Image 1: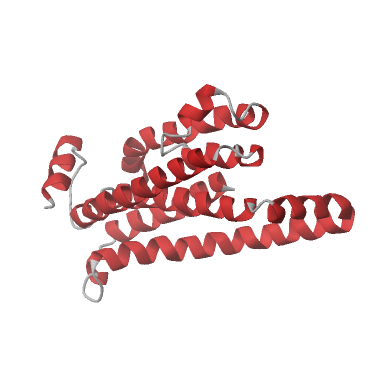
Image 2 (image 1 turned 60 degrees about the vertical axis):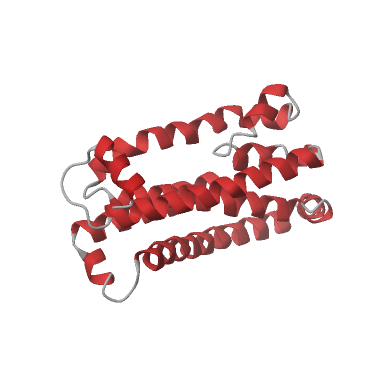
Length: 219
C-alpha cells in the first residue's frame, strides 16, 4: 500500500511540479501564496486524491472478500482492530508518504523535464527497491538481526516495521524507530522546503554541486 501511494501519488506530484515550473505557473502562484503554502498544498492535495482512489479499491476488495469469504474477512478485521495494527499501519503510512513526497516535490522543483528528474531520482529509486527485497524475509523471520538493524534506517522504517508488526516487535523498537522516523520526516520536510524555495525559480541545467551549495545557503 505504501509503495502504491508513493509511486502513484508522488509520481503525480513530481510531474505536476515539473509541468508547472516549465510553464511558469509556479511564478504565477507565487503572487497569491507563499512557497511553503504551495508545497504543502500540493503534498496534501495529491495525498487526498491518491488515498481516495485507494479507499475505493479497498472498499471494492473488502466487499468482495466479505461476500466470498466472510470468515476470512472477519479474521482479518479481528487481527487489524484487535491488536491495533490498523493504527500502527497508518502511522508508518503517513510518515513514509510525507518523507518521500517532500523529496519528490523538491526534485521536481529543479527540473523542467521528466528526463532531468530521472537523473536525481536514481538514488531515491535505489532506496525504494532495497526494502522490497527484504519484505518476504521480514514476514517469515521478523526478528532477524539484519532486519532489526535495517528497521532503524529511516527510509526503510515504514516498510520493514509495518511488515514486522504482526510479530509484535519489542515496544522499545517501535518507539525508537517511530521517533527516529518522525525526526527524519521533519528534517526532510525542512530541507525539501529550502530546496523547493531555491529550485522553484531557478533556470538552466541541473548542476548538482551548485544545487547543494544553493540549498545550503538558502538562496
